[in-house]
Length: 123
Image (cartoon, rainbow, N blue to C red; front, side):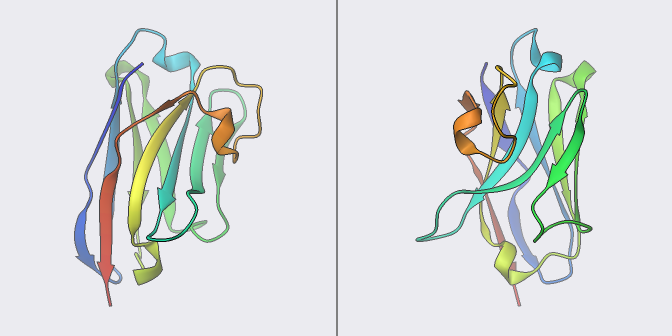
C-alpha cells in the first residue's frame, strides 16, 4: 500500500483545512486509517483514526474540531480540520493499519505511512 497525503498549507488561526490521503491497493477498505502529526522537536502524536467496525477516534486536543472520514470507492481518507490553532502546526502523516490488532492510538500499530503534508497555522 502506498499513501499520498495532500492538502496542507499556511492558514490563520480559526481557519479550516481538509487533508486528503489517497491509497493505492485493492484492500484499502479493510484497513484502519489514521492521522498523526509531528511538530518540530516533538514526538509524532496521534490525531485521529477510523476503523470499519469500531468507528472513529480522536486525540483530546482535536476532539470537536477535527473530523476523520473515508471514501472507500476513492481509496481516500480525509481529515477535516476546523477552528485551527497555532498549536496545530505540524507535519501531518496518514497511516494504514493492516493487522487491526494494536491500539489505534499507537504508532506501532500502523504498517504503512504517507510522506507527510505541512500544516502551518499563524496567530
